[in-house]
Length: 275
Image (cartoon, rainbow, N blue to C red; front, side):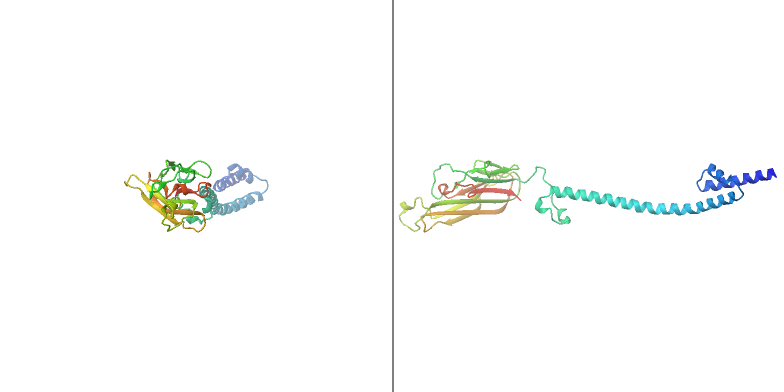
């Protein structure tokens, strides 16, 4: 009787061990469950192990299904964060007036220039040095390029009446010359009375380049000064876009330097900037 009980117990242990190995349980855990006192302990442990063996595939299946979902959600959040950071970097690099453009328009904006900005200059009037004025000959203007409102930036240089273009491109060139004088008696045959009273004033923006032997006129403006009043004040403004080459020189010529109003820098000025 004792031998039969021992064999029965050994068979139960072997069966429990094999079932525990299939379900991933350790042998010691299975043995401890099977050695519970009472005859119903063995059948109860088997039922528990069978229930676990049925639950394990479902748990593993749920984990395998949740893994790609969690992975995709994590990637989505990371990509969204990187995109937001990249958009903030773009907004920091583009001008404020273009910060509210749609994203598809910002994508085609050129990258920031390595030198920090485009060439530009704004020159203001100074008192012109006395020169001998020949009849029907235009005179070149001198300019202030450092003080007050005047500046030259990003390799745009001013030297000896000329604004020197540092790189090829499309430039907007502008000038305003304000004249002041006494009334002209237009049509008067007495020329002696009109020596300091011209009938018209002229402003010309001229380009000088090594590719051509003669200077070329880019813009020209003229105005009659046959006024009724004894004194007159007349500003002339010129401005347009031109394609320039590196090394081109720009200057402003006027019909009579003695008539230029140099009292204020916001009345007479000259400038250019790369578009």
